[in-house]
Image (cartoon, rainbow, N blue to C red; front, side, top):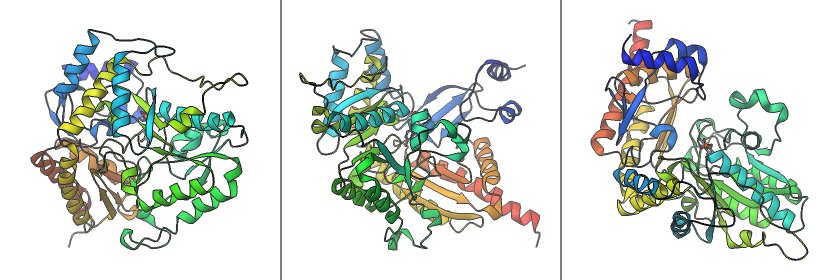
Length: 451
Ligand SMILES: Cc1ncc(COP(=O)(O)O)c(C=O)c1O
């Protein structure tokens, strides 16, 4: 048994993988990654795999960025852990100042958590307690989008319910009120993004106006519903949502966990809509994907609603052991410096052009139902007639054998490369991606229906 097989055997003996079918995992020769650098994952055999999905959408600045590695190294020799309840440490103070400086508009107050789901939980609790502290406990419902995804804790699954993931726990979820998904791949109003009149917004309008007295907050993933299948939708939707929330005294939470930190071409997706939310959830790219850290960024107005007085204790009794962890804070400070210093958004502009050109071309490949691209996000859907999810999975296998790591979302295939991917590396990713599409969609058809 070679080294990799030995690792695989031990893996399937003890490790429980997330989002992984056990039987098919045990049959597959899955990669065992040992190290990574830049846009490459490197397995135990030394094979280099281009990381086409930024390792679950977080490694925005590439793997093992020297500045982030250096910051982690330095900080871990100084202070690894220090409670943040009732006291502070220098790392979290510096980071909070940096986040406040880059956050949109008046968002200047940072509450830390560890994973994305924990920051959504915190945002939910902040919004509920905000109204409770202000003497409106009846405002306790949440509104979200159908197909939205906000994490896998029971609270988050109630907000972003995806049947395929959450059906087995549906009976214990506190489900939000949902509005129609702005699903441009399958627009019910037969619009193209260029002539979109946001008819789908009517459903959100109805949800908010009917339930405003009992609703604490609306939460959406701005510009792109990621886990639903990379549903990129017009920023105008979020702009209208801001206005409607203001008119109805409902808070607006933007979940920027996946799209924040440059993914859309702007530092935060809310900038594309030209609005400022009441709360913004961030995670993933905050540390350049190096360590778990997330946060809710909000305004002083919301923070001030949590000041106790002699009549009422308004303290926010919510926290996690590792919130504001010094090593993660140092990694995040280093990452923010890199985003700013290295003109990462400039590189996204270059990648965006390449992805847009390629993905609009892929639309003409037989079996591709539609495609979409914005910033450093691009996706296409395999039609049902061409085998949908099964074919998408085969395409990812072909791509992996050629050196590109991607994962399908049902019948949707997407490329979310690190934001620092160079032109050559991007060309290589696109070449492998396109070859895999053609091999599985075009050449297969020719074999099945020989002329
Ligand atoms: C929009 C969005 N919100 C929340 C989450 C949950 O983040 P985490 O997996 O870090 O808990 C994700 C994860 O993919 C996400 O895409």
